[in-house]
Structures are given as structure tokens and as C-alpha cells.
Length: 151
Length: 151
Image (tube, rainbow over all chains, first blue to last red; front, top):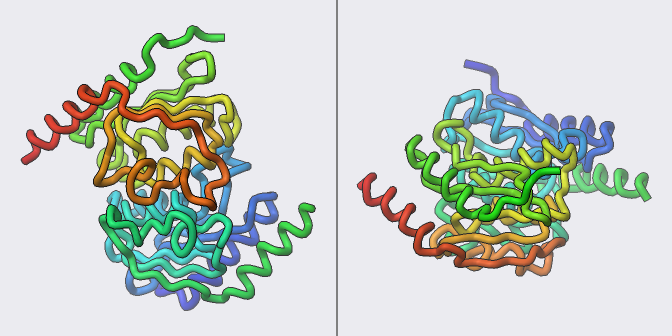
């Protein structure tokens, strides 16, 4: 059932670039199963969807759950170009995602290694494995170029 | 444009009861404008929608944003029967909601006065006014009855 994607983060980066082309903050996310088969891929759509919850991670998690017909994805991995915010981190916990792999750290808005540190709270009922800093330079460069162009 | 709702929390409680009737954890939410006109009302649909993000607050915020055609609701109030989790609290911050008024406190899963305390983080870019403990007994009783019946 499906072929493993050799580089899910590259796919997430492509989603981030497509988001930037729409004027969205360039963040992309991919959900794979444990074998690396892609269940969903999405980019940030907050402005174009007029939806404050339409972060790449939320859209990808919702799409993967819709594909499976299940509100939980205990075998899934979430690949994302930027450290998730507290909303997305808590959504990951609700979805019981096994592992989160992200690109750039986000000291200003992140909720995994910064701020709310959702998975480190004693009230957090599910703690995924977390790997940060993957393809960090490329992920950061994309965001920096976007904000530089907007100024 | 519209008539002010005299008791938005009662409307949220009705949404919570309707959620319970579907086998969902009974939480309801209502978004009003500053005058109390209802923009959206929703109940928890995580299981029936097979969507881990389908908390009452997220559904109500998304519906209100869809109604307005705007990803931010700076004049809006969110009324909810239970203390929001970190996902919903961060969604409130993203949506720039002016005020959050909730019923029962949630020491196990709340992210406003417990756990991640999203609005108290130095990284939180928008802090709504928060009022907790409204109709607390009634909101708590609904949740307790639901979990007692499930055991």
C-alpha cells in the first residue's frame, strides 16, 4: 500500500514554497506512516483560507485523519519545516502522533522547545519523540527570504 | 445586524449536551461579537468527525471566521463550557479574540490556567482577557455525568 517517500522534509519544503507563492508565511508539513508512505501534505493557508487554525500541521493532520477515517494516528510521523506552535503541538498530542521532525527552531512562536513547551507539561497526555533542526539552514533561509521581501 | 444573545454560555451548554448525545465529550462553545451577537456555536466532534482538532472552540472559531471572511476576530468573545486546552488557547491567540469566558476549570487537560498556560508565555503574541468559573457547577456536572455513564 504505497511507496515510502525518500525525503518527506523535501516535500514539506515544496509545500512551504508553494505557500510563500500565495503570500502565506512559508511553512509546510507532511504526515507519513511508520514506513514513510505519505498520508498527507499541506502548506500554511491562514490568509487564503481566512482560517486562523489553517497552519500546515493542522491541515496535514486533518487530511491524514480524513484519509484514515480515524481521529488518531499512533503510527504516524509529522514532518514540518518550522517548530510547531502550541496549537499544532497540542494537536499532535491529541492525534497521538509517534514522532515530530521539524526544520527551523522558532524562538518567537514555537511551542515545542520554546514558550508553552507543550510536550514537557505534566498535563500532556501524549509525548511524541521530537527531532529538531533537520535541514535547518534551508528551512530558515526560506522564512528569512519571505520576511525580507515583505519589509 | 443581529440580536444580542442574553446568555451565550447557556447556548454553549446546549451545544455540549448535544455533543454528549453523540457520544462526544460534552464541551460546547459560542463566539459572539462585542455586543453579544452570536457569530457561531459548536460542540465537540472529535469522534464523529474523526478529526483530532474538532474541539468545540476550534469549530466555533473556524465557523465565525468563515462567516466574517477574516482569519482574525479582534472584537470577538469566546464562550466555552470547559477551560480550553493548549491547542484551543493558541488558536484563540492566533485569532486575536478579545475575551475568553469559560465554565469548568480543567486541571488535567486545560492550557489556560493549567499546564502550558499559553497566554502567560512570554512568546504569546496576543493575550485575551480571561474569565473562568462561569456556571461552573452546571458545566462540571455535565462532564461528570458523561464520564460516570461511560465507566
